[in-house]
Image (tube, rainbow, N blue to C red; front, side, top):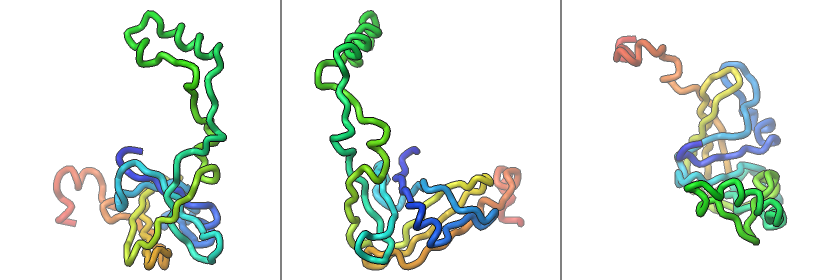
Amino acid sequence: MGMFDEIIVSEDVLKEQNIKCPECGKILPSKFQTKCLDSTMDEYVLKRADNLNVVKLYSLGPPDEKYWKEYTSEEIESINGEYSNSAWSNFFQKKPGDGYYLPEAYFPENRRHRDMGELPHMILKMYTSCECKQFVHVNLKFTDGIVLDIKTVIPEWNNLDAKSVICGEENEK
């Protein structure tokens, strides 16, 4: 998703906070992008706090080791055989102990959630596009690490037609 950080909003927060597309009224998809945090391609989850009735932002940790799968000796032979005559053979060479994380390791519920702590008086802007192809901004207002307000808006530039933007006529409208 580029140099954006990704925020996954839990389904219950999407529904309870009524995070909908202003154009078609459908609940927005759960994956958003933002540049308001570190812009280091990190992943976050916005969910209800476990012991409180508030919505908070959590940083997602690395996948749990129980989802790590080592290559079998047959897989190692097969992979190494594929690249034996290639210039990439050193790069793709596998050895015992190498492996990969299973796809379910990357689900938010299977990763450690680290509380982002206090995001004092911060407005975090996150972006997504709806099924109706409308680009939508969602603004989250934090105070002491707790989401106080959520606003969904369509950016003004989204309502301009491409011709007027390309020709520099946006100031004339």
